[in-house]
Image (tube, rainbow, N blue to C red):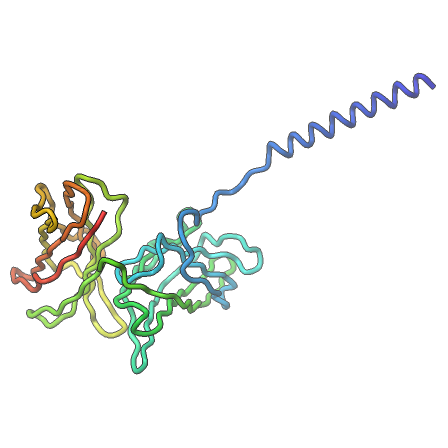
Length: 276
């Protein structure tokens, strides 16, 4: 009986140690996947039924009139896993009482997701006060070889400070839209200045334009001064013009633009206020 008790106690200790080791091992292997949408807000959501894919649209802020950086998350409708290999294209459309029109947009540059998201953009040319915006998102899901389109409703606001302006060129009667591309955190000193320019071809078509020459003068009206060492934006790619603006102090700055085409000034009346 004494030997039996010793054996029983030994087995109990072995089972306890095994249990503790298993718990410890399981605890050590538990991992939490980072959320790729952390820091963004969801501005639209729906399903591309034919592709069996849920479409969620994220941004740093709610949609506004101007150039919006967007991030599209695709998830499989069955497994709820992120879809990271897909063709994605956008078609923003404003439906008004008697007419419809589109807006400039940039599709994801790759069929491969970046950190499980597809970066893209839409430049809404008016707010939802004039009608109803829908964001069409066409998806070809390479995981299941299926395609479909989601039509997502979203609200577009006018920002406190305008981020886009438009004008008609006296040279060729073309209508241009110029938007300020949101940058990183603004600092006192030299900052990147990026604009995007689109030419209206029709109510449903806008093309990125590389033909303009842009100069600007930054001033601080409340203080009565400007700043030195600014760099005029020049075209880089896909309608984007990049330069530098030097903010010498915090507050509200006025960026006054002069836009030329073929040596002729076609607009010098517009400006963008920027406060930081």
